[in-house]
Image (cartoon, rainbow, N blue to C red):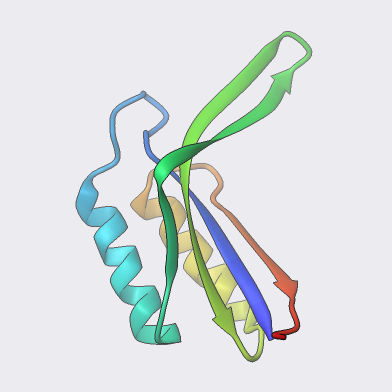
Length: 102
């Protein structure tokens, strides 16, 4: 079993809010494909990273996660590229880890 997490930005690179329909479409796609979804949306997470030695970048993000029996890496790579276009991002983080259900 795999847990796949998608980190989605609340704002585009210019600081404008992402359109709500981008999140809705993504939720619908994931629910349709994986029969469920957990969305961490109530308190946005903060993403911080160093752009260079003197610049720290910041993002407010929501996290969508799904579980899947198998990890279809080609599909996820293609879907990540779709999300990058949808959310107008250079990069959208999609991460996966093997899990054991207890």
